[in-house]
Length: 307
Image (cartoon, rainbow, N blue to C red):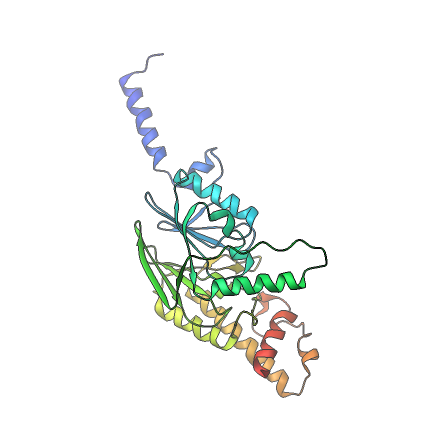
């Protein structure tokens, strides 16, 4: 079949245009659906099973933030490899030690040059694994040895990675005693890990060093440290809320934590025993989106206030 010069030029132009389409547009035209959702710049999210995964991908570098569980980690890694021709991942970052953020480390480990986390995270992973083994049912298989970071930081860490600059900061005890805030400086996107549960009752890991009171302080510090138009990625969100949001969502979570402490403090002041307080199920006043109060958060708040 011959093709005219005009037809050749038209088809060539279409091919060039197609090569520049956003990833999601390519998927919409019949290619393999892209599971990586772009947020801004070279940064995006993957939602599977567990805490929200963040990523940075450009023509020369790749960073993945958190690894979920093994099955969804494999799905995410396959999606990342589809964008990068399976080149090495420069860094896998763990925002903290919980299994829904580090359980897929073993899947990513062969592909990642380094795993990066706060200095407390490997110890917290191992302690959590030891507790799980101790509490396992008789005859249950021993849990796998946790795959931990090989690059650790104490307060701050910063490095150019491809076209991005990645900065990590530790603000002190909050959700755990090892929470890293991960900033993609060029994109102006910040991955909060589980420092923000967007309109959802949080996990407050007291054995892991959590402090609700200081968590409030951390939220304020992070808000001050970033621009008004920063986009934040959240570890978890309520069923009708997104895994990304703004400073207003960050401060809403701060206000929830403040209100939780105030509510439980008022219950203690009335002389209500712990067994009564932790079984309250009415919604926290002012925060109906979170649904009824649950024992997990009430227990953590009561124990912190009476420690």
